[in-house]
Length: 417
Image 1 (cartoon, rainbow, N blue to C red):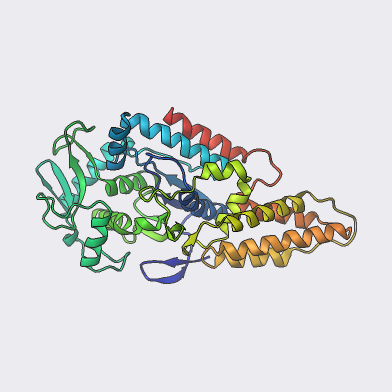
Image 2 (cartoon, rainbow, N blue to C red):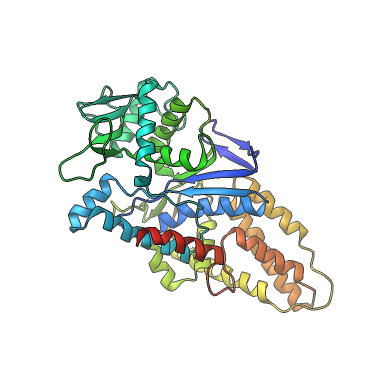
């Protein structure tokens, strides 16, 4: 399998380093409901995991929930709800939606607040190696201490600062040595939750949460790290700086996968713009398979806009796949599907080209239905339709999601009751 490496800006071959392939996905900040952009982002992770499993790999998959964050605290104040209660409520909503979409649950689904001790240890290590400094109860990462800073985003300092400022950075913080420095530990503000630390009560910064979670559950270097394209900078750039300067091990991540933006009416689909398409609303009208196929019809690196007509097309494809998987077979000539399986693998091995792979699967379904009508033996065709559909997370004729999906998400949901 060859995948795009945003650091080298080239497509490179993935070669497993051990018996287990590792993936970390940046999870939600739970202060609102699940929209199509969320479904798209986490479909990329699900597609990667399922395809790796299809190719015989064992995958250890971790996805977090950012349960303490400026946005959650702000939303809680707006609606008059405790931050923990608010986060639990919207996390349950999100997990229920992923379960309905038959997305494979991660092996570990931790809260950021579960690893406060590990976060403090990470911050102490960064101070010890000269990558961070404390000032007035807060701790900051000093970006000038890490020469490769910007290698992932390929932005110069002025571009990085402008982008960071658009995404929550405060360049005028008087405690900073440099406007581009970012918070590792934030001193407690009046009325906000806090944890004890060597620098006084406070809470973790956003970037150090994911670094601490990934290292605890997957190790200091990992195979894959995925998330929305808007996380590439500053979030993922900052993760690299933290981990590589702290551990001395490079690369922290071998392959980064960034889901491109989903648009609606020409603009990025986002909470702040109020132009969201809710996943749960779509599932009231369409079968989950239709939504999964609609999403998979776009390449993970390509921006796309919501199109109701194309979603209706995906619904027709979903029905065709189910008919192919359940059609009556005959006793005539056996249907040969080896070329379809080869073409499917070739497409997915080409930087997860899901649109091309979906085309192969649809062609296989059409040929299986034609063979069924001709009285051929279609056992191999139906097995292939089911096997390849599993890569896309399709249920076909099953009334419920896969047993492991139901069991896994049900277990994770207990944490947020």
